[in-house]
Image 1 (spheres, rainbow, N blue to C red):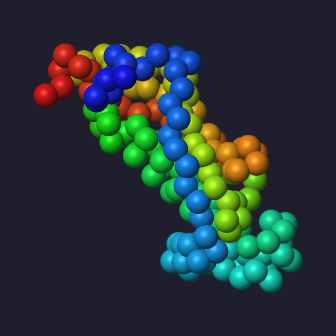
Image 2 (spheres, helix red, strand yellow; image 1 turned 90 degrees about the vertical axis):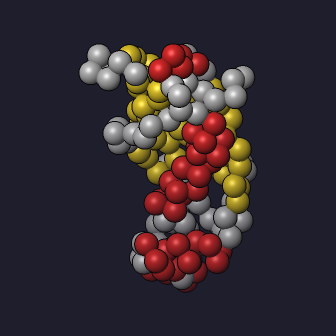
Length: 152
């Protein structure tokens, strides 16, 4: 494992285990109050009456937690230069207070960029599962990385 991951270090099929994070009722409510103030993210009674079946984290909160794991588990140890966006994002199951999410990133593809010869682009499929190994989220997105010979 390199100290810093560069474009050349990523191969299709490679999997990175990103770690785990737990979420509390207070964290769910605090995030929702600021960023996604829908009743089923703020109130247990409203959550139970919804399709979610209980107080549940905003999908954006779930995504933010998984993004933290991607950053601390991989990107902060890389020559990453950002991403042009997310190609696909699915919130597959609700995330409830007390859930622990474990995330991983699989390399789907990598290619050099003719327009930016010092960079390459790596496409990942990022997934998160709860403590019951039920997948709750996935996304696919490209991320730009510096090439080793041009980093510095």
